[in-house]
Image 1 (tube, rainbow, N blue to C red):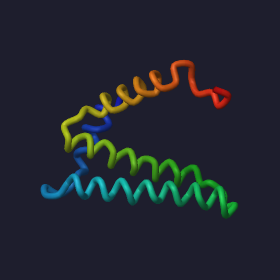
Image 2: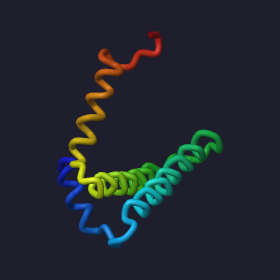
Image 3: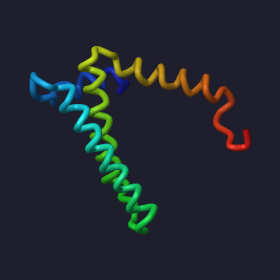
Amino acid sequence: MDFNQYQEAAKRTLYGNEQVLTNCALGLAGESGQVVDMVKNYTFKGKPLDKEQLTHELGDVLWYLSQVAEWADIPFDQVAKENIETLNKRYPHGFDRRK
């Protein structure tokens, strides 16, 4: 499945006609916070990292990202492609801490 296919499939579960962008932005913040909390608990509290739960939370983040792009009429493939282009410009030889 490519990003545009994901975006289209995810759109069928989008609810509401008003304030969709606000709902998606707030949902993105909330789901991202859950990912952050899992990492915090793993890093600082010594809790095991539940990869199944992390996968679920990352999927929720992905859903909200795709729907923000959908609202703005931006193909999700374009988001991914432009991000890779930015990374390639920023780190043409990959990331190296020594440089």
